[in-house]
Image (cartoon, rainbow, N blue to C red; front, side, top):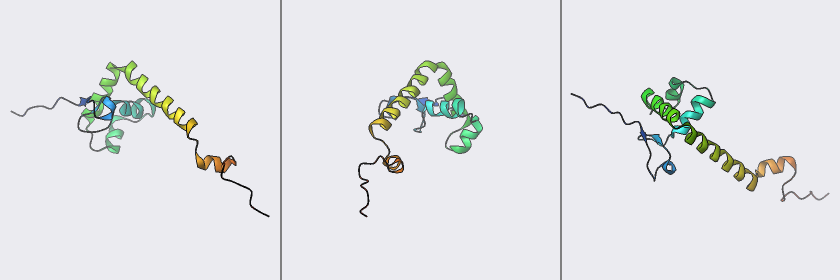
Length: 110
């Protein structure tokens, strides 16, 4: 009789910062949450985009999310805030050039 694999989610200290992810991958539960809940992708679309995942993996991640909603949403919010802080402390050089606010742009001699 074949043994069934039922472990879809793992959380290891040295992998993905200890955040829960799909076993055998670096795809986090919060990534599945974002794609499904915030971007409106179906589980089938997620599997099409990431063929290393099974539908069972995606559904297990969504189940985990619903069981740990507050924790997962807090992680997503913390990452968004960190990204905003990084943007403010390291502004885009391209944006600075395009808007004329770059320190390296001296007027060209006439």
